[in-house]
Image 1: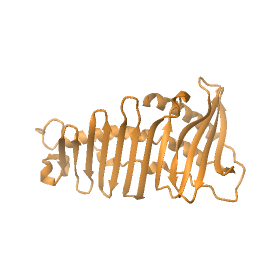
Image 2: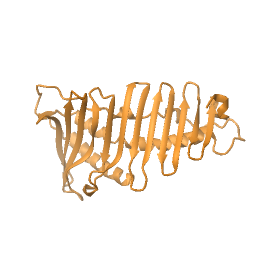
Image 3: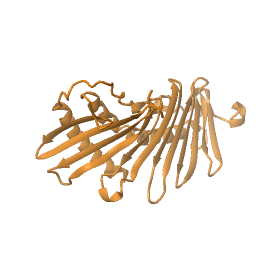
Image 4: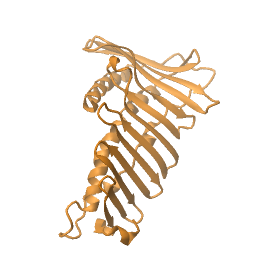
Length: 268
């Protein structure tokens, strides 16, 4: 389901790129200022600690060495987090447009045609200053292609006025799905070093969820799926952490140099 959705998003993104290149200047300034289009990349985790190859400090280490196991888990989850950023390109395109205030909503709209297929795009924002939030919805309409859409809601969600908190969802392209979200996430950030983001991928069989937390130099990633729960913790400043299969109650720890170490020896 995720792979099929990604293909559809890629096609829509290509058309959107054409839309961007054919952008209109809009209708001009409005009496009030529109809300700032949200930067949903604030919910993107920092996995840079695991980008270097695992270091085997002792060739006799147990199979499933701690850092390498954690690295595999984290980098695998990175794909799912990256999937949640697909909407970023759409927003960047809208950011380059003029907005128009219509019926109490701010609207960014544009259209284009390519190779016999045409597409119209609307980003709609409804500001609720009393609730300190903005409700967003991204709609596409297309014709001339294999599948045609009429005001299909591709993305939507709510953000605080300052963009530091929010919840977001991306929906399937199948109208009969009743706009069931294929991915949903929320985030809360109070500085460059403190972030909490939760991602969920609903499924008819079993949901998959990821919870990422950053507290200064300490990070935690928790993955829940049909196989159970796995938690990875890493402390960049002290170069240590653990991989913990909570379902099987198996915990592997590493410390300086990425070498295996007994968890009790480092208080983990």
